[in-house]
Amino acid sequence: MLENKDYFEEVYRVVREVPTGRVTTYGAIARYLSLRAGARMVGWAMNAAHGSDVPAHRVVNRIGVLSGKHFFGGPTVMQERLEAEGIRVEDDRIVEFNKLLWDPSVELAV
Image (tube, rainbow, N blue to C red):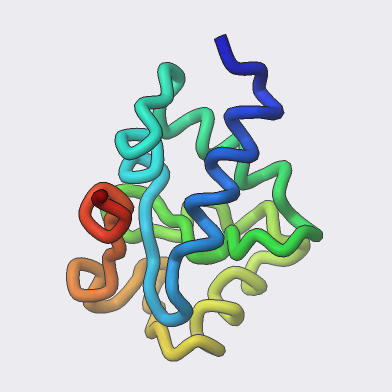
């Protein structure tokens, strides 16, 4: 069984692959990695990633809501980072979410 640290490193490896201007979801990462604790484990990993080189701002919930925004040191930081990459956000939700969604199961398929 993998330790939390190992799970987190696998999550970070995937999140680092998300291209600028695209987003993915906690669940999409969990499915790709077959994580037992699922999306919740990905959320824990994203919370622990702040201050690192992991672009945690590109990970949102399954309907495109910025559910992790409170972990970025201010209520608008996550949105500001996304908007700096050309992603529109309205009412804490990604505009054209389905168009911007990056699914690691598709994009990283071997």
